[in-house]
Image (cartoon, rainbow, N blue to C red; front, side, top):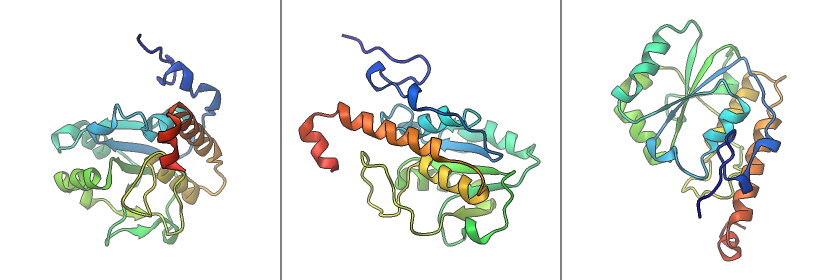
Length: 197
């Protein structure tokens, strides 16, 4: 029996997120470099991010050639562009005077896949990199990570946007994300759900 999907949020009808989505329009432009493995993932936080912030642009790929259109777009961009990625070269977003009227590039994938995208795209290293300060805990109960400081792409986006614009209400992002997590947990068999408690 085939599953029926909501035409708006693209989730199964029994996990439809539409009633939990309240759109927001930040000054900051979000551009996501998404690893191909993440596109069809049921726990994909970028899908939720795009529902709440429809202006989010997602570029799927891994190699430089995959991101040729993105690079062409960035070459015409008149706003400052920052890569969101913690490294020895990156600085805390709270230690910088960054205008909210900027572009944030985020890499969506596991740490290993994100690092591979970074290695295959040396042009990313030419961008100023920023990271969140320590202390943020992930709400992503349904996805395990080897790193304690792992945040989903949606969570990283929400906290970055808040750091850039203190007056921006990012609670719609986190509420939609929490709803997605709760619906995914509800859909799991009881014995599987226990693994995430």
